[in-house]
Image (cartoon, rainbow, N blue to C red):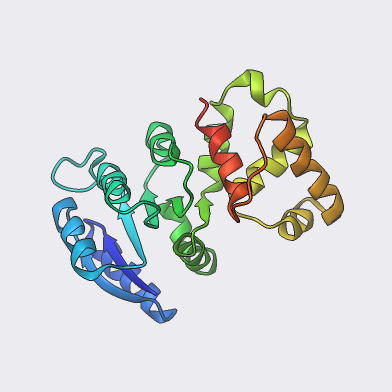
Length: 214
């Protein structure tokens, strides 16, 4: 796997590079600003771009806008965004396409090396990895009328689904059977009026379709 990193803080940029390379993930380029990130992606054709939300020259939403532009140029191009805080507007805009191959993590999560590397691999493979705090913020700010259709347990399952967890992982986390989780997910799809989809990312796309309602 080959990755391009866009991060303006030199220490974090170097740390991410060392971390990924220690797990056999090649870093094709590590750059400090948005224009350089675009150039690096076009030059190296990586499997994933790891992007800070706030980058030079504006230090506002530069990284997000570049991520969206990259996916316009290359549909479903894997992008994993890192942010210092939960930026609900940014998260919703990034997820609005519902195409998968996307991630949004808080920078604090990088400290959990195993989970972070797993998120990188998940997004590169076409899945979605959302930070639990981001999921919680989006769910709380989402459309109450739809959220109220779900039971408390179904809402818990939905949040865990959005983190990219399998039925087995959700069952283990909630201390229930996989069969029970399967029933909850079916209920979630039905209550949120989500049609059947034969894509491998159906679970993730369902969560994204729900979150972008708000």
